[in-house]
Image 1 (cartoon, rainbow, N blue to C red):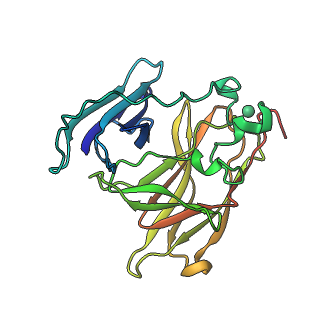
Image 2 (cartoon, rainbow, N blue to C red):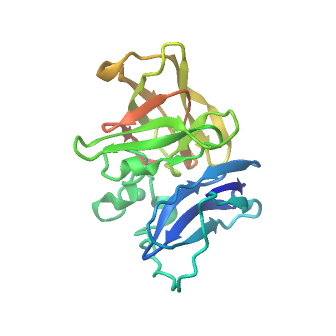
Image 3 (cartoon, protein in one colour):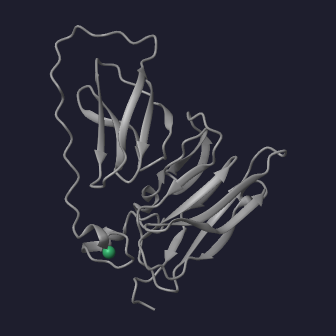
Length: 270
Ligand SMILES: [Ca+2]
């Protein structure tokens, strides 16, 4: 299925496509605000029973913006089914967060087993790698590579279905506020074709002031194979307001693997 989505402004929460055959399960999702543009999405549906498509969106409690979907086209092989159909049971909703929303990802454990800090983009937590949301609108996007055997995980840039020639962009959830010792450490690698020079940069997106200047950038190549991985450490510093960390890349960057970590203290910490 191909469709175009408009996810604009602070009111835009997230959009997901689910397939309902015997169960209902998500097959595509895109979070947050992408700007005032229509972005192409390609949704792959693989099932051997008749199915329905469910599109679900969430909006936030803000005055402007919203979510729209247009120009939905199914691939030519799709046929409508005359089978009797009863809607599969909906999956269980996510559990209620164990603490206030502004205490999630504030570098301060508030829940049992620090559950509120576990999906904040820090790969040293089991669910940390799932804390990054791809917000790319162009022909490149960030994906999560996961090898269950070797336990290796990293984010990498791959082709995406958007048509704009923009950078691949991925973001953490809202983090902080942070103390002065807040830093970010990660491994990165570029293993592209010899003619291509890639770029990778990291910046903070402040919840009040918006996009801040680049904190760090790298341009070029890092080598081949295992030796391509290099380490970087960036000072994020004290941030009064909640913020997101954003990673932008051109070309085939692989970035951040297991071992990437935050070292941040809550505001009022050291
Ligand atoms: Ca917390």
